[in-house]
Length: 269
Ligand code: HEC
Ligand code: HEC
Image 1 (cartoon, rainbow, N blue to C red):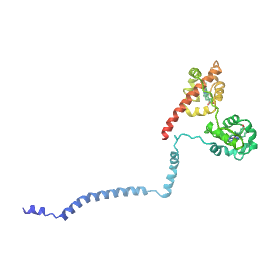
Image 2 (spheres, helix red, strand yellow):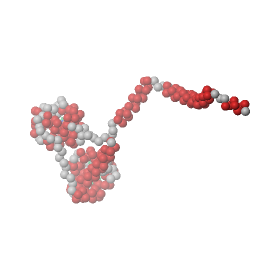
Image 3 (cartoon, rainbow, N blue to C red):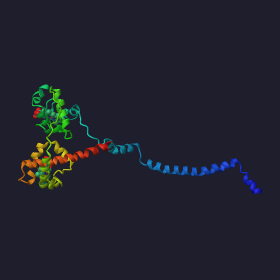
Image 4 (cartoon, helix red, strand yellow):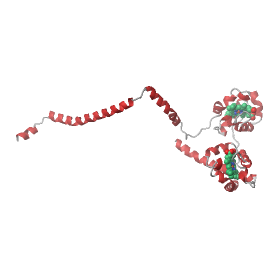
């Protein structure tokens, strides 16, 4: 009985102490372990992490950081005439370099403006003497080049509007004819990319080719290029057949290009 009574005599203070001890002992152990681990990591971090080295590392990875900040899928926004002029054309036309007509110099532009908008645009797109095609920037779209032309010409007294002549769309009959010619005489290279022929799915290559205009492509296909045989190597093909095949190829390439665009826009969102 006496023993029993003693057990019951545990005071509230004793109870609290036991409780606190029981709770804190593991807690203190955990804290000690954490401190120990952090100590190891801290000493590892300390090894050679001088400020200079830190900066060097940051500079080394910076190009990636910067590149990532520019969304590669962002849809391209076409620039205004003023932007195109400032970013591309001004390097020559600002001061009249290489004999280029100087910006706002009405005398230098007068005779050129008299040639008409179409001629000026063609010269700006395809190049003219020392004037490089697209002002030397192949990334400019036709519309951007047109806006650059209009921006400069209007500053010298013209009243042009930046419009693009639309190439006539081939009829379904021409496309069907072209598809047949293509299958017979062109596919063996242009489906496979043989000897560097631009595959119809190579959107980058065709984007650039389409910019050259149909007239150029017809001529290249009929007369041949460095790697491409005249008439696809089939002398019996009429000009109209070769042109139809080109129409078909451009049509297919445009579809492939269009297919990449909505995807890009979704990705940008
Ligand atoms: C590397 C220098 C250079 C750059 C950059 C340049 N041009 Fe030119 N441009 C010239 C020269 C040189 C001429 C004169 C060519 C001639 O008449 O023989 C010229 C002439 C022109 C003409 C008149 C063509 C004609 O038929 O008389 C137009 C239009 C034109 N440039 C538009 C542009 C546009 C638009 C840009 C920018 C997208 C641009 N240029 C960028 C050098 C340049
Ligand atoms: C024996 C292989 C071969 C055949 C067949 C062929 N091509 Fe090509 N083609 C090429 C190559 C290679 C190029 C790239 C040439 C270059 O880069 O200059 C090319 C380029 C082209 C181009 C772009 C021109 C340029 O500046 O690059 C067009 C348009 C074209 N071919 C049309 C046709 C048509 C139309 C046919 C069928 C009637 C055809 N090709 C058949 C090999 C071929």
